[in-house]
Image 1 (cartoon, rainbow over the protein chains, first blue to last red):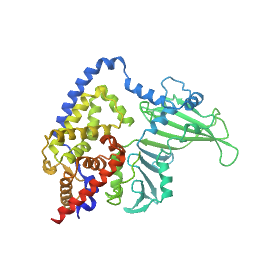
Image 2: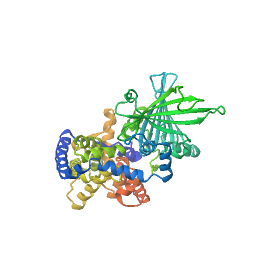
Image 3: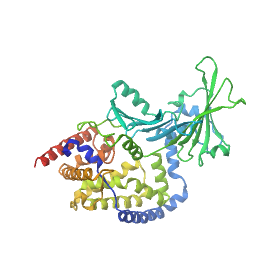
Image 4: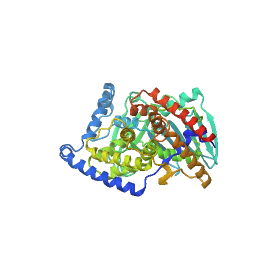
Length: 301
Length: 180
Protein backbone atom coordinates (compact mmCIF):
# COMPACT_ATOMS: atom_id res chain seq x y z
CA UNK A 1 0.00 0.00 0.00
CA UNK A 2 1.23 3.50 -0.80
CA UNK A 3 1.85 5.26 2.56
CA UNK A 4 0.51 8.49 1.02
CA UNK A 5 -2.93 6.85 0.90
CA UNK A 6 -3.26 6.78 4.65
CA UNK A 7 -0.61 9.12 5.95
CA UNK A 8 -2.57 10.20 9.03
CA UNK A 9 -3.04 6.62 10.13
CA UNK A 10 0.64 5.80 9.59
CA UNK A 11 1.80 8.80 11.63
CA UNK A 12 -0.76 8.16 14.35
CA UNK A 13 0.44 4.56 14.68
CA UNK A 14 4.00 5.67 15.30
CA UNK A 15 4.84 4.94 18.92
CA UNK A 16 8.30 5.10 20.41
CA UNK A 17 9.03 3.71 23.84
CA UNK A 18 11.80 4.71 26.20
CA UNK A 19 14.52 2.25 27.11
CA UNK A 20 14.69 1.08 30.77
CA UNK A 21 18.13 2.63 31.19
CA UNK A 22 16.77 5.93 29.87
CA UNK A 23 13.90 5.81 32.38
CA UNK A 24 16.32 5.20 35.24
CA UNK A 25 18.66 7.97 34.14
CA UNK A 26 15.89 10.53 33.72
CA UNK A 27 14.06 9.63 36.94
CA UNK A 28 17.28 9.64 38.99
CA UNK A 29 18.13 13.15 37.77
CA UNK A 30 14.53 14.34 38.14
CA UNK A 31 14.35 13.06 41.74
CA UNK A 32 17.51 14.99 42.62
CA UNK A 33 16.01 18.13 41.05
CA UNK A 34 12.75 17.54 42.93
CA UNK A 35 14.56 17.19 46.27
CA UNK A 36 16.37 20.49 45.68
CA UNK A 37 13.10 22.15 44.72
CA UNK A 38 11.36 20.77 47.84
CA UNK A 39 14.17 22.05 50.09
CA UNK A 40 13.93 25.52 48.56
CA UNK A 41 10.18 25.54 49.00
CA UNK A 42 10.18 24.05 52.51
CA UNK A 43 9.68 27.30 54.51
CA UNK A 44 6.78 28.30 52.26
CA UNK A 45 5.11 24.89 52.54
CA UNK A 46 5.50 24.87 56.30
CA UNK A 47 3.53 28.11 56.58
CA UNK A 48 0.59 26.73 54.71
CA UNK A 49 -0.06 23.01 54.44
CA UNK A 50 -2.69 23.21 51.67
CA UNK A 51 -1.89 26.36 49.70
CA UNK A 52 -2.71 25.11 46.22
CA UNK A 53 -5.87 23.27 47.15
CA UNK A 54 -7.09 26.33 48.97
CA UNK A 55 -6.45 28.56 45.99
CA UNK A 56 -8.23 26.12 43.67
CA UNK A 57 -11.25 25.97 45.93
CA UNK A 58 -11.43 29.74 46.36
CA UNK A 59 -11.24 30.26 42.60
CA UNK A 60 -13.88 27.66 41.96
CA UNK A 61 -16.23 28.96 44.61
CA UNK A 62 -15.81 32.54 43.40
CA UNK A 63 -17.07 31.49 40.01
CA UNK A 64 -20.36 30.20 41.35
CA UNK A 65 -23.24 32.56 40.68
CA UNK A 66 -24.93 34.31 43.58
CA UNK A 67 -28.18 32.50 42.96
CA UNK A 68 -26.48 29.17 43.43
CA UNK A 69 -24.99 30.35 46.70
CA UNK A 70 -28.45 31.21 47.90
CA UNK A 71 -29.64 27.74 46.96
CA UNK A 72 -26.70 26.21 48.82
CA UNK A 73 -27.65 28.16 51.90
CA UNK A 74 -31.26 27.13 51.69
CA UNK A 75 -30.92 23.53 50.72
CA UNK A 76 -27.38 22.38 51.34
CA UNK A 77 -26.37 23.73 54.70
CA UNK A 78 -23.74 21.19 55.69
CA UNK A 79 -23.67 19.88 59.24
CA UNK A 80 -19.88 19.63 59.48
CA UNK A 81 -17.39 22.30 58.48
CA UNK A 82 -15.36 19.94 56.26
CA UNK A 83 -18.32 18.25 54.59
CA UNK A 84 -18.41 18.16 50.80
CA UNK A 85 -21.30 20.14 49.31
CA UNK A 86 -23.43 18.99 46.38
CA UNK A 87 -22.24 22.06 44.48
CA UNK A 88 -18.63 20.89 44.84
CA UNK A 89 -19.58 17.48 43.47
CA UNK A 90 -21.29 19.09 40.45
CA UNK A 91 -18.28 21.35 39.89
CA UNK A 92 -15.85 18.43 40.09
CA UNK A 93 -17.93 16.38 37.64
CA UNK A 94 -18.04 19.38 35.30
CA UNK A 95 -14.26 19.19 34.97
CA UNK A 96 -14.10 15.47 34.26
CA UNK A 97 -12.94 14.72 30.72
CA UNK A 98 -13.20 10.92 30.73
CA UNK A 99 -15.56 8.80 32.77
CA UNK A 100 -16.81 5.21 32.91
CA UNK A 101 -20.13 4.38 34.58
CA UNK A 102 -21.03 0.73 35.20
CA UNK A 103 -24.74 0.33 36.04
CA UNK A 104 -25.91 -2.59 38.16
CA UNK A 105 -29.21 -3.97 39.39
CA UNK A 106 -28.99 -5.28 42.94
CA UNK A 107 -30.17 -8.73 41.86
CA UNK A 108 -27.50 -9.17 39.18
CA UNK A 109 -23.74 -9.43 39.64
CA UNK A 110 -22.94 -8.33 36.07
CA UNK A 111 -23.45 -4.70 35.02
CA UNK A 112 -26.55 -4.10 32.91
CA UNK A 113 -24.63 -1.49 30.96
CA UNK A 114 -21.20 0.14 30.95
CA UNK A 115 -20.86 3.63 29.47
CA UNK A 116 -17.66 5.50 28.69
CA UNK A 117 -17.75 9.20 27.84
CA UNK A 118 -14.70 11.05 26.61
CA UNK A 119 -14.81 14.78 26.03
CA UNK A 120 -11.15 14.81 24.95
CA UNK A 121 -11.83 12.32 22.13
CA UNK A 122 -15.44 13.47 21.64
CA UNK A 123 -16.80 9.92 21.73
CA UNK A 124 -19.20 7.81 23.71
CA UNK A 125 -18.90 4.03 24.10
CA UNK A 126 -21.52 1.60 25.38
CA UNK A 127 -21.21 -2.03 26.43
CA UNK A 128 -24.22 -4.24 27.04
CA UNK A 129 -25.46 -7.80 26.68
CA UNK A 130 -28.15 -9.12 24.39
CA UNK A 131 -29.19 -12.78 24.20
CA UNK A 132 -26.05 -13.80 26.05
CA UNK A 133 -23.73 -11.86 23.72
CA UNK A 134 -21.64 -8.87 24.66
CA UNK A 135 -22.20 -5.91 22.34
CA UNK A 136 -20.48 -2.56 21.98
CA UNK A 137 -21.73 0.66 20.38
CA UNK A 138 -19.46 3.61 19.64
CA UNK A 139 -20.59 7.17 18.88
CA UNK A 140 -17.66 8.67 17.02
CA UNK A 141 -18.50 12.38 16.69
CA UNK A 142 -15.30 13.58 14.98
CA UNK A 143 -16.05 11.14 12.13
CA UNK A 144 -19.84 11.58 12.40
CA UNK A 145 -20.48 7.87 12.54
CA UNK A 146 -21.68 5.16 14.88
CA UNK A 147 -20.07 1.75 15.05
CA UNK A 148 -21.60 -1.40 16.47
CA UNK A 149 -19.95 -4.72 17.18
CA UNK A 150 -21.55 -8.04 18.09
CA UNK A 151 -19.96 -11.49 17.76
CA UNK A 152 -16.95 -9.89 16.13
CA UNK A 153 -19.02 -8.33 13.34
CA UNK A 154 -18.55 -4.57 13.03
CA UNK A 155 -21.20 -2.41 11.35
CA UNK A 156 -20.83 1.31 10.71
CA UNK A 157 -23.52 3.95 10.17
CA UNK A 158 -23.37 7.68 9.49
CA UNK A 159 -24.86 10.03 12.09
CA UNK A 160 -27.47 12.32 10.52
CA UNK A 161 -27.38 16.06 11.26
CA UNK A 162 -30.39 15.83 13.61
CA UNK A 163 -29.04 12.81 15.39
CA UNK A 164 -25.63 14.48 15.68
CA UNK A 165 -27.08 17.46 17.56
CA UNK A 166 -29.07 15.21 19.88
CA UNK A 167 -26.21 12.84 20.62
CA UNK A 168 -23.67 15.64 21.05
CA UNK A 169 -25.91 17.27 23.65
CA UNK A 170 -25.89 14.03 25.62
CA UNK A 171 -22.11 13.88 25.45
CA UNK A 172 -21.67 17.27 27.14
CA UNK A 173 -22.71 15.98 30.53
CA UNK A 174 -22.49 12.74 32.45
CA UNK A 175 -25.94 11.15 32.61
CA UNK A 176 -26.58 8.96 35.59
CA UNK A 177 -24.25 10.86 37.91
CA UNK A 178 -26.48 13.81 38.80
CA UNK A 179 -30.28 13.97 38.56
CA UNK A 180 -30.23 17.42 36.94
CA UNK A 181 -28.07 19.38 34.52
CA UNK A 182 -28.58 22.69 36.35
CA UNK A 183 -28.55 23.06 40.12
CA UNK A 184 -31.44 25.52 39.80
CA UNK A 185 -33.61 22.66 38.54
CA UNK A 186 -33.55 20.85 41.91
CA UNK A 187 -37.08 20.71 43.36
CA UNK A 188 -37.96 22.69 46.45
CA UNK A 189 -37.42 20.59 49.55
CA UNK A 190 -34.26 18.93 48.26
CA UNK A 191 -31.76 17.96 50.93
CA UNK A 192 -28.08 17.03 50.97
CA UNK A 193 -27.01 15.25 54.14
CA UNK A 194 -23.90 13.42 55.21
CA UNK A 195 -24.39 9.78 56.20
CA UNK A 196 -22.38 9.22 59.36
CA UNK A 197 -22.89 5.42 59.55
CA UNK A 198 -19.41 3.81 59.25
CA UNK A 199 -20.96 0.59 57.94
CA UNK A 200 -22.28 2.52 54.95
CA UNK A 201 -19.04 4.33 54.15
CA UNK A 202 -17.18 1.00 54.48
CA UNK A 203 -18.84 -0.09 51.21
CA UNK A 204 -16.25 2.05 49.38
CA UNK A 205 -13.27 2.59 51.71
CA UNK A 206 -11.85 6.10 51.76
CA UNK A 207 -15.06 7.80 50.69
CA UNK A 208 -17.57 10.03 52.47
CA UNK A 209 -21.24 9.25 51.94
CA UNK A 210 -23.96 11.80 51.24
CA UNK A 211 -27.66 11.45 50.49
CA UNK A 212 -29.36 13.75 48.02
CA UNK A 213 -33.11 13.47 48.60
CA UNK A 214 -35.84 15.27 46.70
CA UNK A 215 -39.54 14.89 45.97
CA UNK A 216 -40.85 14.13 42.50
CA UNK A 217 -44.40 14.05 41.21
CA UNK A 218 -45.52 10.53 40.43
CA UNK A 219 -45.94 9.96 36.72
CA UNK A 220 -49.28 8.21 37.31
CA UNK A 221 -51.15 10.96 39.12
CA UNK A 222 -51.02 13.33 42.03
CA UNK A 223 -48.91 11.16 44.36
CA UNK A 224 -45.42 12.16 45.42
CA UNK A 225 -42.41 9.95 44.96
CA UNK A 226 -39.33 10.57 47.11
CA UNK A 227 -36.01 9.95 45.44
CA UNK A 228 -32.68 9.39 47.15
CA UNK A 229 -29.29 9.38 45.42
CA UNK A 230 -26.55 8.11 47.72
CA UNK A 231 -23.13 9.47 46.75
CA UNK A 232 -19.86 7.81 47.83
CA UNK A 233 -17.55 10.79 47.34
CA UNK A 234 -13.76 10.99 47.28
CA UNK A 235 -13.18 13.73 49.90
CA UNK A 236 -10.10 14.98 48.05
CA UNK A 237 -11.37 15.23 44.48
CA UNK A 238 -15.10 15.53 45.32
CA UNK A 239 -15.78 12.96 42.61
CA UNK A 240 -18.29 10.16 43.22
CA UNK A 241 -16.97 6.60 43.10
CA UNK A 242 -20.31 4.90 43.59
CA UNK A 243 -23.96 5.93 43.45
CA UNK A 244 -26.98 4.13 44.85
CA UNK A 245 -30.53 4.91 43.78
CA UNK A 246 -33.49 4.62 46.16
CA UNK A 247 -37.14 5.66 46.12
CA UNK A 248 -40.29 5.56 48.23
CA UNK A 249 -43.85 6.60 47.42
CA UNK A 250 -46.55 8.69 49.14
CA UNK A 251 -44.75 9.57 52.31
CA UNK A 252 -42.27 12.18 53.52
CA UNK A 253 -38.54 12.27 54.07
CA UNK A 254 -38.81 11.66 57.81
CA UNK A 255 -41.30 8.79 57.72
CA UNK A 256 -40.27 5.39 58.99
CA UNK A 257 -41.04 3.74 55.69
CA UNK A 258 -37.79 2.56 54.18
CA UNK A 259 -36.44 3.62 50.85
CA UNK A 260 -36.25 0.83 48.26
CA UNK A 261 -32.77 0.18 46.96
CA UNK A 262 -32.97 -0.80 43.31
CA UNK A 263 -29.88 0.10 41.31
CA UNK A 264 -26.36 1.37 41.73
CA UNK A 265 -23.47 2.57 39.59
CA UNK A 266 -19.74 2.21 39.97
CA UNK A 267 -17.86 5.21 38.59
CA UNK A 268 -14.25 5.29 37.43
CA UNK A 269 -12.23 7.95 35.65
CA UNK A 270 -10.07 6.20 33.04
CA UNK A 271 -7.41 7.84 30.92
CA UNK A 272 -7.94 8.53 27.22
CA UNK A 273 -5.45 5.77 26.41
CA UNK A 274 -7.41 3.22 28.43
CA UNK A 275 -10.62 4.04 26.54
CA UNK A 276 -8.76 4.04 23.23
CA UNK A 277 -7.37 0.57 24.03
CA UNK A 278 -10.88 -0.83 24.63
CA UNK A 279 -12.11 0.64 21.35
CA UNK A 280 -9.15 -0.72 19.40
CA UNK A 281 -9.58 -4.11 21.04
CA UNK A 282 -13.30 -4.39 20.26
CA UNK A 283 -13.62 -2.52 16.95
CA UNK A 284 -10.16 -3.04 15.49
CA UNK A 285 -7.44 -0.53 14.65
CA UNK A 286 -9.58 1.22 12.02
CA UNK A 287 -11.90 2.64 14.69
CA UNK A 288 -11.44 6.35 15.49
CA UNK A 289 -9.35 6.81 12.36
CA UNK A 290 -10.35 9.74 10.14
CA UNK A 291 -12.78 8.56 7.49
CA UNK A 292 -11.00 10.17 4.57
CA UNK A 293 -7.56 11.72 4.14
CA UNK A 294 -8.86 15.29 3.73
CA UNK A 295 -11.14 15.17 6.75
CA UNK A 296 -9.73 17.12 9.68
CA UNK A 297 -12.37 16.29 12.25
CA UNK A 298 -14.41 18.19 14.76
CA UNK A 299 -12.61 18.68 18.01
CA UNK A 300 -14.18 19.49 21.36
CA UNK A 301 -13.63 23.06 22.46
CA UNK B 1 -7.79 17.82 35.11
CA UNK B 2 -8.56 17.24 38.77
CA UNK B 3 -6.20 14.25 38.82
CA UNK B 4 -3.56 16.59 37.34
CA UNK B 5 -4.13 19.06 40.17
CA UNK B 6 -3.83 16.33 42.74
CA UNK B 7 -0.56 15.06 41.24
CA UNK B 8 0.86 18.57 41.05
CA UNK B 9 -0.12 19.24 44.64
CA UNK B 10 1.65 16.04 45.73
CA UNK B 11 4.64 16.92 43.56
CA UNK B 12 4.90 20.28 45.33
CA UNK B 13 5.18 18.39 48.60
CA UNK B 14 8.20 16.60 47.12
CA UNK B 15 6.39 13.33 46.49
CA UNK B 16 8.58 11.18 44.22
CA UNK B 17 5.77 8.74 43.49
CA UNK B 18 3.76 11.59 41.95
CA UNK B 19 6.73 12.48 39.73
CA UNK B 20 7.20 8.83 38.75
CA UNK B 21 3.47 8.54 37.97
CA UNK B 22 3.56 11.61 35.74
CA UNK B 23 6.70 10.38 33.99
CA UNK B 24 5.29 6.89 33.34
CA UNK B 25 2.01 8.31 32.04
CA UNK B 26 3.50 10.74 29.52
CA UNK B 27 7.04 9.56 28.68
CA UNK B 28 6.22 7.59 25.52
CA UNK B 29 3.91 10.24 24.09
CA UNK B 30 6.53 12.94 24.72
CA UNK B 31 9.35 10.81 23.31
CA UNK B 32 7.32 9.98 20.19
CA UNK B 33 6.56 13.68 19.64
CA UNK B 34 10.17 14.75 20.17
CA UNK B 35 11.51 11.96 17.95
CA UNK B 36 9.00 12.69 15.19
CA UNK B 37 9.88 16.40 15.23
CA UNK B 38 13.63 15.84 15.42
CA UNK B 39 13.85 12.59 13.44
CA UNK B 40 16.35 11.42 16.02
CA UNK B 41 15.58 9.19 19.01
CA UNK B 42 18.83 9.98 20.86
CA UNK B 43 18.22 13.72 20.68
CA UNK B 44 14.59 13.07 21.62
CA UNK B 45 15.72 11.25 24.77
CA UNK B 46 17.87 14.27 25.64
CA UNK B 47 14.83 16.50 25.23
CA UNK B 48 12.73 14.19 27.41
CA UNK B 49 15.48 14.27 30.06
CA UNK B 50 15.74 18.07 30.01
CA UNK B 51 11.97 18.51 30.16
CA UNK B 52 11.49 16.25 33.18
CA UNK B 53 14.50 17.49 35.15
CA UNK B 54 13.40 21.07 34.55
CA UNK B 55 9.80 20.15 35.41
CA UNK B 56 10.92 18.57 38.71
CA UNK B 57 13.19 21.51 39.51
CA UNK B 58 10.38 24.01 39.08
CA UNK B 59 7.75 21.87 40.83
CA UNK B 60 7.52 24.24 43.79
CA UNK B 61 6.63 27.21 41.59
CA UNK B 62 4.44 25.38 39.10
CA UNK B 63 1.07 26.99 38.32
CA UNK B 64 -0.80 25.09 35.59
CA UNK B 65 -3.21 27.04 33.39
CA UNK B 66 -3.59 24.17 30.92
CA UNK B 67 -3.72 20.40 31.33
CA UNK B 68 -0.56 18.70 32.52
CA UNK B 69 -0.30 16.88 29.19
CA UNK B 70 -0.49 20.14 27.22
CA UNK B 71 2.07 21.71 29.54
CA UNK B 72 4.57 18.89 29.07
CA UNK B 73 4.02 18.72 25.30
CA UNK B 74 4.56 22.50 25.10
CA UNK B 75 7.82 22.05 27.01
CA UNK B 76 8.94 19.40 24.54
CA UNK B 77 8.04 21.60 21.56
CA UNK B 78 9.94 24.56 23.03
CA UNK B 79 13.05 22.44 23.61
CA UNK B 80 12.86 21.06 20.06
CA UNK B 81 12.60 24.61 18.68
CA UNK B 82 15.63 25.61 20.77
CA UNK B 83 17.61 22.77 19.25
CA UNK B 84 16.74 23.86 15.73
CA UNK B 85 17.56 27.48 16.59
CA UNK B 86 20.95 26.54 18.01
CA UNK B 87 21.53 24.13 15.11
CA UNK B 88 23.01 21.59 17.49
CA UNK B 89 20.80 18.98 16.01
CA UNK B 90 22.00 16.17 13.77
CA UNK B 91 19.48 13.67 12.52
CA UNK B 92 19.81 9.98 13.28
CA UNK B 93 17.32 7.63 11.75
CA UNK B 94 14.35 6.88 13.93
CA UNK B 95 14.54 3.11 13.75
CA UNK B 96 18.25 2.90 14.67
CA UNK B 97 17.47 2.44 18.34
CA UNK B 98 14.91 -0.23 17.54
CA UNK B 99 12.34 1.37 19.81
CA UNK B 100 9.50 1.82 17.35
CA UNK B 101 6.53 -0.27 18.36
CA UNK B 102 3.43 -0.83 16.34
CA UNK B 103 0.92 -2.69 18.45
CA UNK B 104 0.01 -6.29 17.64
CA UNK B 105 1.07 -6.90 14.06
CA UNK B 106 2.28 -10.08 12.40
CA UNK B 107 5.80 -10.11 10.90
CA UNK B 108 4.60 -9.22 7.40
CA UNK B 109 2.47 -6.34 8.65
CA UNK B 110 5.36 -5.24 10.83
CA UNK B 111 7.68 -5.06 7.85
CA UNK B 112 5.16 -3.01 5.88
CA UNK B 113 4.59 -0.77 8.91
CA UNK B 114 8.33 -0.24 9.40
CA UNK B 115 8.73 0.72 5.75
CA UNK B 116 5.77 3.09 5.85
CA UNK B 117 6.94 4.64 9.13
CA UNK B 118 10.39 5.14 7.70
CA UNK B 119 9.08 6.83 4.55
CA UNK B 120 6.64 8.96 6.56
CA UNK B 121 9.30 10.03 9.06
CA UNK B 122 11.66 10.99 6.22
CA UNK B 123 8.90 12.95 4.54
CA UNK B 124 7.97 14.73 7.77
CA UNK B 125 11.46 16.15 7.99
CA UNK B 126 10.97 17.79 4.57
CA UNK B 127 8.02 19.95 5.56
CA UNK B 128 8.23 23.21 7.59
CA UNK B 129 8.55 22.79 11.36
CA UNK B 130 5.28 24.57 12.18
CA UNK B 131 3.35 22.23 9.84
CA UNK B 132 5.17 19.22 11.28
CA UNK B 133 4.27 20.39 14.79
CA UNK B 134 0.57 20.72 13.89
CA UNK B 135 0.50 17.21 12.42
CA UNK B 136 2.52 15.50 15.16
CA UNK B 137 0.80 17.24 18.06
CA UNK B 138 -2.63 16.41 16.63
CA UNK B 139 -1.98 12.82 15.59
CA UNK B 140 0.62 11.66 18.12
CA UNK B 141 -0.09 14.04 20.99
CA UNK B 142 -3.88 13.77 20.70
CA UNK B 143 -4.12 17.55 21.06
CA UNK B 144 -7.06 19.50 19.71
CA UNK B 145 -6.43 22.27 17.19
CA UNK B 146 -7.39 24.75 19.89
CA UNK B 147 -4.71 23.39 22.22
CA UNK B 148 -2.12 23.44 19.42
CA UNK B 149 -3.08 27.04 18.68
CA UNK B 150 -2.13 27.94 22.25
CA UNK B 151 1.23 26.17 21.89
CA UNK B 152 1.97 27.86 18.57
CA UNK B 153 0.52 31.25 19.60
CA UNK B 154 -1.59 31.49 16.43
CA UNK B 155 -5.35 31.36 15.71
CA UNK B 156 -6.96 27.93 15.44
CA UNK B 157 -7.70 28.42 11.73
CA UNK B 158 -3.99 28.86 11.10
CA UNK B 159 -3.28 25.56 12.85
CA UNK B 160 -5.93 23.80 10.77
CA UNK B 161 -4.38 25.28 7.64
CA UNK B 162 -0.89 24.18 8.67
CA UNK B 163 -2.23 20.68 9.35
CA UNK B 164 -3.98 20.45 5.98
CA UNK B 165 -1.13 21.94 3.93
CA UNK B 166 1.37 19.77 5.80
CA UNK B 167 -0.56 16.61 4.96
CA UNK B 168 -0.89 17.67 1.32
CA UNK B 169 2.86 18.17 1.13
CA UNK B 170 3.52 14.82 2.78
CA UNK B 171 1.30 13.08 0.24
CA UNK B 172 3.06 14.83 -2.62
CA UNK B 173 6.47 13.87 -1.23
CA UNK B 174 5.46 10.26 -0.58
CA UNK B 175 3.85 9.88 -4.00
CA UNK B 176 7.10 11.13 -5.51
CA UNK B 177 9.10 8.61 -3.44
CA UNK B 178 6.90 5.75 -4.57
CA UNK B 179 7.39 6.66 -8.25
CA UNK B 180 11.19 6.53 -7.95
